[in-house]
Length: 276
Image 1 (spheres, rainbow, N blue to C red):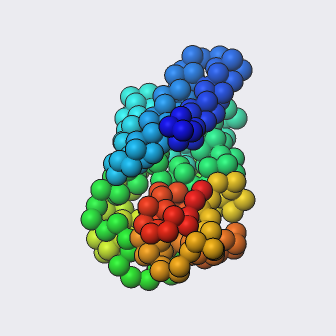
Image 2: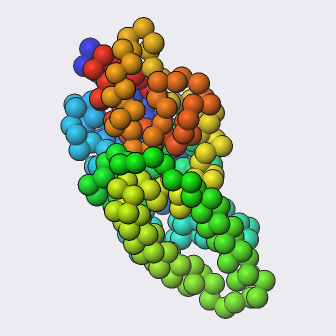
């Protein structure tokens, strides 16, 4: 039945509506109702387009959600959605939109969605995915430790702002969001061309992955292979931008916590042996 094909889109929309209504009723501002309704609707539209086999389906979601967060929430509303903003709100003891964003998208959400954030909502990857290096040209580099340096440095930076009682911290956080994103884009593009890999920034620099990886390990949604259908042609792993060992169903598979659920492997499989 045609309706059955669209159940994933409907289910995702309903899930975000539940989050939207719940956060609105419990936290007050109608912003939460609009925010999660918009995000859920954008994702649902993307899933509908994917069901219709539109190659641009994921890009639609990336642009709709990524630009909304970057331009509206970040620049216009001055809500720092970067990791510095997360530390800032934690030090303030405030459960704001930024804190809620991290809780849902990057800390607890991955238990259900895996690293869907990286594949469909990240405004940094939104730009990087338009670069020409869809799959890595060479083996992964041993520089993933950089993400931990960035993670710790961001925490120390925000902590010092509070310890030194620097004035106008909120304004500084907004500037950090603007400048930080510019730096991220520059570094991401340079790395993509250096390593011939659009997702090099995600693999080596992005500090958010430190939150994402542990929960993603236990994610309910992940790509699985039907061994009876699989012919071991390797096409799925050839197109994977994150170099995941797709043919291994174990949670311990190589780079398993880095799957961004982009569905490239599913689409490439000639035997329909892969599914989420």
